[in-house]
Amino acid sequence: MPPNPSNPNSSRETKQPKQSIHRPPSSASKHPTNWPPEIKYLTRPQLSKRLPTPTVSQLCLLPTPPSPASHPSPLVKIRKITSPAHPANGQFGLFAATALPAKSIILDYLGYVHDPSDLDETSDYDLSLDPELGVGVDASKMGNEARMVNDYRGVPGFERPNVVFETRRVGGNTGELRMALWVGSKDIKKGTELCVSYGKGFWQERMKESGVESIGEV
Ligand SMILES: C[S@@+](CC[C@H](N)C(=O)[O-])C[C@H]1O[C@@H](n2cnc3c(N)ncnc32)[C@H](O)[C@@H]1O
View (cartoon, rainbow, N blue to C red):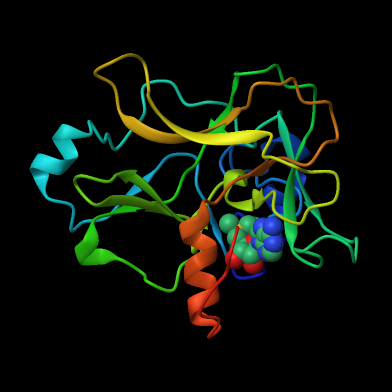
């Protein structure tokens, strides 16, 4: 804090050792490298206020998770794609920061948890959490590193996805329902891009929006 001439305690402040300067706890505002500043970085899901109480209790959606994982995740890195051969060139992608064992969990897909009354139809980041209740997790305006995962289609070197989205219950069968990103059936080497399948529905919708009638095999 700079000295303030109108503050009688100011000169005393300037003599205090450097350690006394207030800093927020380091974990409070740490974002992953390359995190876009316009997107809110989440370390737990953000619940829509419009979610009905029975839905919140059925999915055990908790304002505070029992055991928060470390943030940012040490397992992944966000990188800008700079290969013209990559279909998401110029955008971001998610990469393994370390070797990832087959079938292991990587991280939760965090975002705005909402029901159909609170749906952003333009979002490309909305995953279904509970299809029966129509609850989704939308990471378009807020989320974590998992929002950066690209689809494998057209990515050089990919014939199939190497990671999958699957729900999990935090802390056991009766815990909070979350969407998570998991390693597929094969180990992943450090530095490899992580690519899921968004599903045919995503690309069919994309084609419809761009006016293409038939898409054939996707
Ligand atoms: C969930 S985001 C993925 C992260 C995104 N690359 C970013 O930088 O925010 C989904 C968007 O990524 C792009 N994308 C992901 N995979 C793609 C692919 N295989 N081909 C073309 N675009 C892709 C599309 O623009 C899509 O709308």
